[in-house]
Image (tube, rainbow, N blue to C red; front, side):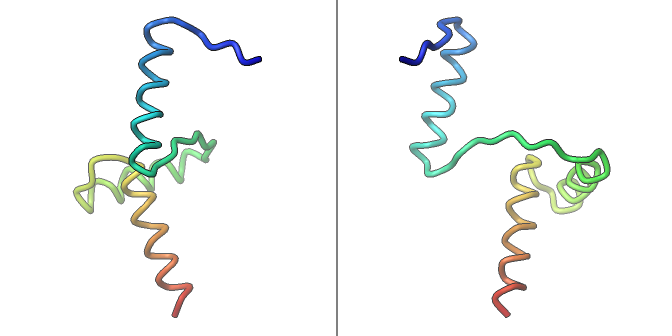
Length: 69
């Protein structure tokens, strides 16, 4: 049996994850070297993106396209 925290913040985070899931997305946490995070931030700024997630997604898509060729 799972026991979930019932704090307002925990409920807010569960609702956020449920909205992401409904949109076909999934949240995850990754431990990355500072240099990679700095690269993502620089890439995000250069591309005019709103988040590191968008930057990472764009980079992955670019890599997928290259791999298909």
